[in-house]
Image (cartoon, rainbow, N blue to C red):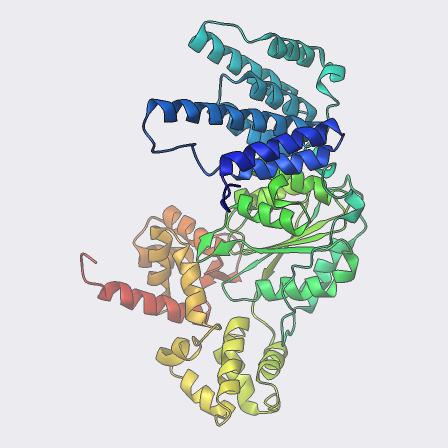
Length: 522
């Protein structure tokens, strides 16, 4: 500090020297913290933009001081067992400084201790190739000895090899003291029905050992059918079976799939891992995540999953934890993760539809109103549409149920009446439609605009003007996204009839009209 001003270079030097004194006195944790704080002062290259020989010389000196501090920082963290957490950081340092032997040695040591002996040998080979190509020299004595120690599997030199990600626990809280995250959203109001599905989900609570496959429940179905509502409702009901906490994540943000690495980093923070100890790479994050969950009874709820590739790193690695997954797309890779429970949600029963409507409206006894049954029918017994209708009645206390029924009886107005605020049926169906490829999207519009309520594959082929095999493949893609359903199965492809639920048919017709009305070139 000079005349009330703090000079970063002086503060950096002071903290590094303090870390050295702490190390000499056995204060390893304090030294790590001081070096971390010192390195945070760097916000880019020293004296960047200053062009003079003196400035360039000083910048080189300062950069060397920074690299020495990083080497000390990495060495201390390796000593306290953070080898798994350091893998990503050290890999980056080696890429940026390929001729700095200390970083190569530290990366090899971290890899070996993380159970990655082959990767440690590969790191040496690639480093040696770089040294020979750039300098015409073999690596130094330290690297050579380390290489021989890896070949001999000599833990006396390298330190004990460990399972993936176990080391990060050493420098954080003991495994028994991790916090129990409570990330589950509040329970769904006016939940009705789904008793059979809830009982099936209870199978996830069966006693399992750490070595058993993780219990997985996959809830799928058409847009707005209540996948998230069922998952959250069951999770609240089963909370006592997961004393070590609940993790929750929506895998879509602003209509785009969220990367599994972002979700892993959020989960690790929720599990009590300090931000600076969270690895930068996805696989390292996933390994640490599985380690933290090892032996714990935790429920992980993953909502609106887009693909198995997005899901795979987020699955716990032990049988005591469970994962409850929702999504529209079929996740073929789940079959390789044990024997997942798969639930495909359909329309609600009439009595449950009336209960749901009554629960949303509240304060008005509409369950005994004869018009309520017709209202449920016009909503297709579709949970989101029922909530939308109930919200309309709750916000319009001067309307009777018959008033809303009269509005919905007009097919041209029905979607508009059910698309207000957060319970917008049209918006949810648009999301499902937007996930289709061009051929499936065209089929959705054409089939929805057809005169028949249901059809077989030959009729579909005629409407789509496609060969029979192509028409069948297109139908299967619509079935996979739950925008089409099997109406009747008379055995074999030729005996099977398909249909769009009424709200989907109305949306397909709207979409067909709007597509035709778009001027060319738009």
